Image (cartoon, rainbow, N blue to C red; front, side, top):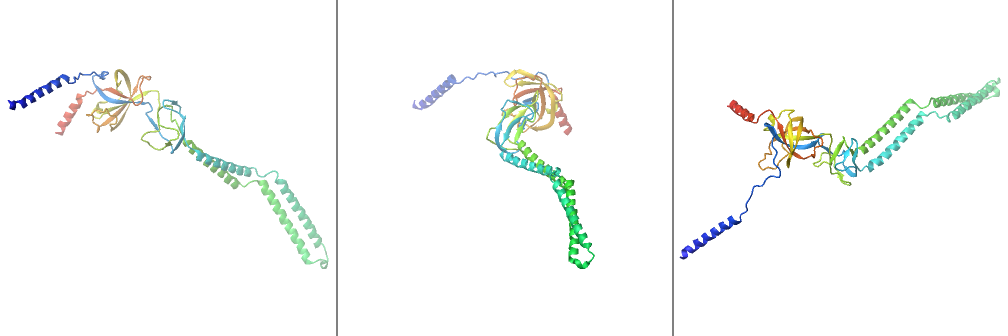
Length: 364
């Protein structure tokens, strides 16, 4: 009897465990999706994942030079005009340099004006007076020379005095010629090469000033087009790095229409034809569908970037990007939103199998 006790207890325990499991197991009932999935409206379509983007595409803004942000003039959602200020960087060092360049320009202009205004009206009368003085001295020297030369008795005068009077006359002649030349030079004004050199100095000073002003203007980032601020990562006091960034400082988007960039798998890309209509469905509400108008097809396959998260999804494939325009300009869509796109095509999907079969036969 004892040898049957253990198997009996085991059988009872197993029966109890099975009964307990069956009685209290969780019953899984099929759950319906929150909204029915979208379906193709045409018998022959190519499906793709669409990404909403502005008509101008996303404009990732950066700054020309690196620096500390001292002013932010917009926020996300603002509409801006072309040339409007978005944010500015610290420019205190350039402002100091600007004042130095302005002073240098004023000095160069003053030197040029001084040369162009020559001769001064106040400088001519003294020069003319010196000429008259030299003329009087020459006349006096000539009289003195004539007097000593008119003496007939050479014993009455010394030869040294005669020579001194003659040399004094010649010196007076030279002095008169010098003063007359100085007066002519004064009346002629500045020398043309001197004026040209002064003009070159002014031009150089203006160019240096313009360079500093340009560098100051580069510290202010402006809107390139009429657009909307889609994203703003600029904060007052942060250090803004120039060049391409993994996260742009600002993202802008412009245009009157909304575009959808659809990624078509390379296995279905051969079926896409230009200017074919398409329909886009909002994810989460298949009742919201928007007819699309063909814009362009970018004939360059790129690696697939827009992923659905499905475990069976291939990520080593390439896609063809087709851009469509949403016909409704007031559609409540947001840039970056994913949509399901169905593109009508005249080529049936079975043609791919026929094509593959013929290719395989040819290879054989």
